[in-house]
Length: 343
Image 1 (cartoon, one colour):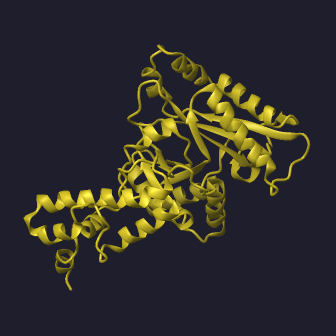
Image 2 (image 1 turned 90 degrees about the vertical axis):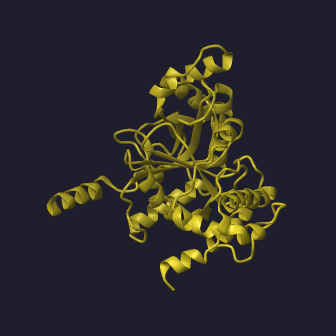
Image 3 (image 1 turned 45 degrees about the vertical axis):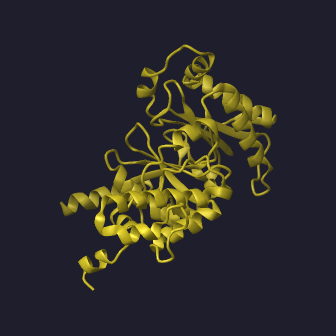
């Protein structure tokens, strides 16, 4: 069968899936991130190569967490119990629009149904797989950001995937050579929780994550426990211009944009959770990383941060405290030299 004949025999949603190779942005996600904590992954990538990096990151993450949302207009706020029903309804509504716009698709329109029921049994494999993954709650949505060089993938609420363990597995796979080295993705930051850039909320989130980390029997510590704090404010230039100083919450957020103030809040939370702890920037046993998320489509002055408490094997302290790169500097240098030689 030729490619044209194959496409003519495909259902509208199958044709759409064949054309679109990356997920669409979930435009309801920013509002959900403002109101609820979510886990996920923040990927740093080459500027102006975000689409290439998205295509590259998807199979790497899918190997460990499932799949990506093909109908991203559903809010991350949906609970796992009714996520499948809503997802199918949204997909069906999109199919209905395609059916109405094309007179040649009347048969497909009848299969869609008028009551937003399930898709027909012969729907595309990708749609079926997506529904199966949604039932398990392992669907990542792509969230739009205002800054280049960053990708944000978020899970639905109350997701149980251990994002730190996922990134640990990815780095081990890359080091062993079992996974193809990425071209565009530089680092994958595992997000354990998100919160507003608010002193009380940030203190609570850090305390909760530190207690969980210390209570994990797999983690062994010397006494006193050594810790470090990292704070990235990517996109802060654009964010600062939009901050009105009209409410106490806005003033609180603006104060925490100061690196020293944020460090003091996080350090106080760590010491409150673990009294026997000291700051050590050279060889910390646990590192609290805070990342400001430059979310698109949020009210002026509203800021959200991603927070994680990471073990020593996942971080690097030089030239600054951050998550390990997917490729070592040596491999990156060898790749650049190879390209120059070929050129």
